[in-house]
Length: 142
Image (cartoon, rainbow, N blue to C red; front, side, top):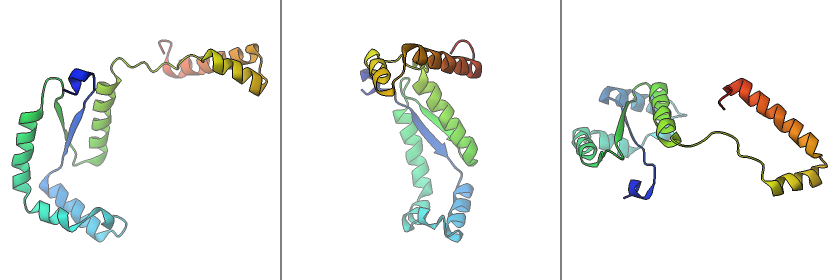
């Protein structure tokens, strides 16, 4: 229903192994700066990991659709998992979205001239210089 209404829905599942989860729990328990990330519930839920695996498999099977698929990301390596997630989000959410700067609103332009005491030539010169910098950084198609 959401995608039928035009919502762009991206579902990510970051998977870590049981061994990696245990390593992270130990690290959080030992490191006082990370201890806040750990609770009794984490250990209680860990004892039911097999049940969670079955539930996750059911969820993926039942809720992955052509218009809103699940993206499974191996996340034992945190930087890899995060970059993979960001790439998927940028690709899926960025389709059809222009990254070009929007033009100056004429009323904003008029008010800027008045308040900032700028001439039209000053603003155009500054805009042309900004465009040149953007093109040199991002290429001519930007």
